[in-house]
Amino acid sequence: MARSRCPSCEYHEFEAVPVTTKTGQKFCLIQCIACGTVVGAVDDVKITSVIKKTEKKISKFIDSLNRKVVTVCTRKNDQDDNNTSKNRL
Ligand SMILES: [Zn+2]
Image (cartoon, rainbow, N blue to C red):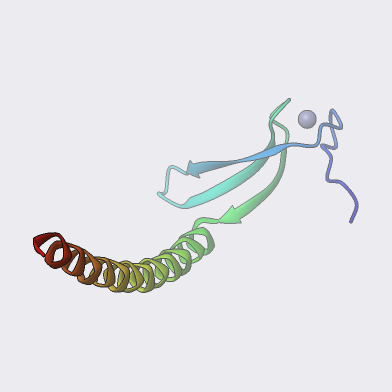
């Protein structure tokens, strides 16, 4: 894949800048980090939906992680109980 570069200064790093117009329309400009030349624009709605999708994925991941942690903790407590009873003897 060819490396993206700025049409003005030929730099290769870009940033997304959120912009709101006077009419309240939200979108995101993709601009060169070095000189600020705008090379593209992204609809804010699209960005929001991408973020929401990612949030869902992450919350699912955390849920499954929590379940695993609970399982591990329960096992650990069982072992601790065994150790305690051994110490008593
Ligand atoms: Zn540039």
